[in-house]
Length: 127
Image (tube, rainbow, N blue to C red; front, side):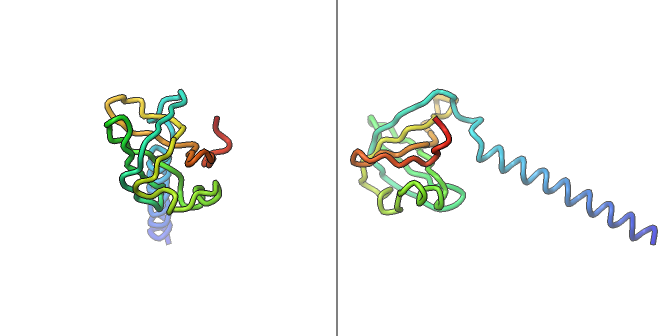
């Protein structure tokens, strides 16, 4: 009985440690710590799109530069009114959000997407 209890406690500790590691890594990836606090706007043409979980990633050509723009998860895009076909190669769009703190990286996370004058608010709770 004593060995079984020790095994159960050890197993529980391992599961708890793994869960904490998983959650903190997930938060670090999906948080906003890597991005500047200032608002940023980018207008360009989508040259490639990978939509799906954990979030969509667009390659955008703007001012002769190649940018990576993160958009929302499929449910977030849908809630905002964006359909996958609207984020396709050749579409011109304006993205408002936050760029990477490291200016050598041309990466941004979009809070809003504007296509043909229509605004799609991915994160209505953010400014």
